[in-house]
Image (cartoon, rainbow, N blue to C red; front, side, top):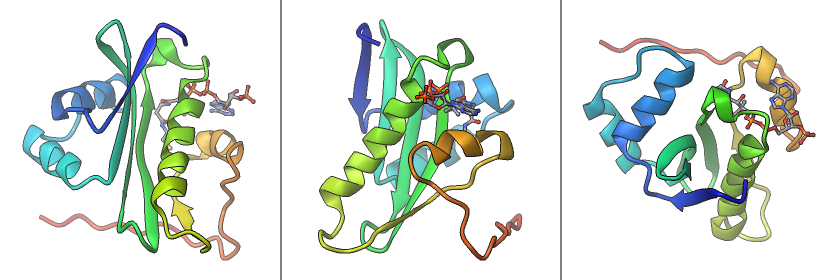
Length: 138
Ligand SMILES: CC(C)(COP(=O)(O)OP(=O)(O)OC[C@H]1O[C@@H](n2cnc3c(N)ncnc32)[C@H](O)[C@@H]1OP(=O)(O)O)[C@@H](O)C(=O)NCCC(=O)NCCS
């Protein structure tokens, strides 16, 4: 961990797509990604001697709603504590920027085998077990 560098709000669209493709197959378009990153509240990325190895980002409205997106650690760098570092940085961002003295709820969508990872940070399925609904807009 000591030889890794953490950067804030510097993750580029090229780096995002590259990391995406190490875990999820073909990534989104450059244009879409660049627009998404421009409208992201907070980005954190991790580098090993200049090579990007992990990323995570936070979207939301800064007041009521924060949403964690695109948490990725390159497969060969997993299980070394980098995922924990990413989530801790995102939660720190909320602590430092959210309205103090209020309850702030942070949401994310976890694939089933990643639920135990997020539970380590206190994330819990909502009581109503609401399902995420999606639709494609052409
Ligand atoms: C999920 C992911 C970000 C975890 O990153 P990581 O760097 O391997 O995680 P860490 O090494 O920081 O692990 C932190 C803790 O979570 C645990 N953990 C990590 N992945 C886990 C899993 N799939 N199931 C259970 N526990 C897990 C670790 O054992 C560790 O526990 P400890 O601190 O008590 O020892 C990484 O596996 C990844 O990028 N996966 C592919 C992309 C993905 O699926 N992202 C999440 C989308 S929902």
